[in-house]
Image 1 (cartoon, rainbow, N blue to C red):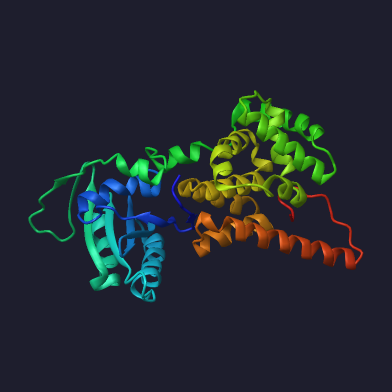
Image 2 (image 1 turned 90 degrees about the vertical axis):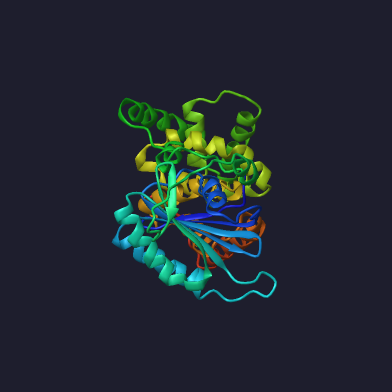
Length: 353
C-alpha cells in the first residue's frame, strides 16, 4: 500500500500524507480527479479535497466536509501547509489542486474561499457533480466528464472504496445478536490470556502467525489477541520485529479483531488497528480508527501516540524510529515506577495504558 497517514478531526477534516508518491502525469484536472479516489482511499462526496504537490511529488492530500466548522479547519490547514509553508530548496514551493464535491451552491463558495487562501500557489480549482466537473467561476459552465485511471490504484496501493462508510465497515463494531455473541466470546477470550504480559504477547503473536498460515481462529481467539494488546509489554512482544511488509500482511487480522470487539472494549483495539493501518499505508483506515479510539479513550498513551503520528504527518517509513522512542519511553516510565516502589495496575480499556 502507499505511504499514507491520515488524521480525521472533530471538524470533519482528514489528511493523508504520501511523501514518496511521484505526481506522474498530474497536470490537468482530469488527471488529478482520476487520482483523488486512490489518494484518499475512497470516493469523496460533499467535501473539498486539496492535493498538495512539490516538484513532481504528491506531498499531502486533505479532505474536509462542506460546512462552516470544517471549512474553517480546512482554510487554517491550507494557510499553514501551503501559503505559509517554508520553501524547501530541494523540493521547491508547495502548490495545490482544489476540488469541490457536492451541490454547486455549497461547493463553489467553499472553493472560492480556499482559492483566496492560496493565491498564486493554486494549480486548478474545479467543482465536481456526479460524473462531471467544471472550473470554479467558469461562466460558461462547460462540464467535462470525470475520467477514471486505474493506474493510480496500482501505484498508490490504497483500496478505492465507494465511500468513507465502506472504509468504516472494515472495522465496524458488532451489533444486535452478534454483539451479544461477541460479549460471550470475549469472556472466553479473557480466559485464554496469560496474566504475564510477555507470555500474553507471545500468545497474540502465535495467533497472528496461525492466521497468516491459513489457520481458522475462533471468535474467542481473535478477541483474546485484542485483550493481550492492552498491555504495553505484550505489544512490545508483538511489535518488536514488526515491519511494513508484516503490517500489510496482518492488517486484515486486526480488522477481524475490530469487527468482533464489543463497544465497551474497543479503544485499544482501534488504536492497535490504526497503528497497523498507518504502518501498512492505509491512510483512510487510520482516520476511522483514530476517531473511534479518541472517542473511547483519548487519554490513553497509545491513542495519544497514534494521534501524535497523525498530527505530525509522519510517513510509515518512520515506524522504526517511532517504535524505538515508544519503547524507550515505556522503559523510562517503568524505571520511574520501580524507583518509587509503585506496582502497575491491571490495564483495562478506558483506563491508562
